[in-house]
Image (cartoon, rainbow, N blue to C red; front, side, top):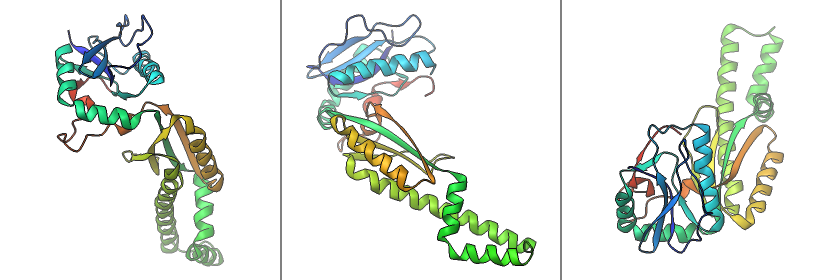
Length: 259
């Protein structure tokens, strides 16, 4: 029977609520595997697991319950090991790294901030901040709209100005929020976002971070911010310096399904 892994914690971590269930239909019972000073939160892995809403919520609920009682190195959804022995073997092999990460992440949570431009607001901002654009717009207006080449030039200049504004706003957002966090992880680029940032924040000081987000929102009305959290610190379970590349806790199993 393959083993589904939710996260890694200390052996001394308080017990989870009795009868807690995890992923699967019917839901599999959550249990603890111990190895030395460490423990893994696991259950039997259901066949054909996919990233459906009920299972995603079950995975998150287990981590939320565990994280409320102490630091946990969270697995992303879909981590499956061949069996219990494979899990405990990885705990033993990477014990030093896991202990360091648990110490570093104690009392901390993750907030993810995604930023995008309000199209009209950003356009007004770049027009106000770019004298060359104002001059060209006025020249085209006086020329009855301008020639095809002039319109094309204006369009290219607007696109370039908006791209520059996106880059500047991404850097500014990073600089504004970074002082309120212990660490920042830059997420992968994707269409529609000018910034995708995850912040490691003290759980008890989350209000300071969220206040900084609100200040950034007020100072930049042309930037739309979406905040997700508090979350388990998924983005901060990076390899230790002595680990092989990519040897995060997720190395103890393969990924099943899609996030």
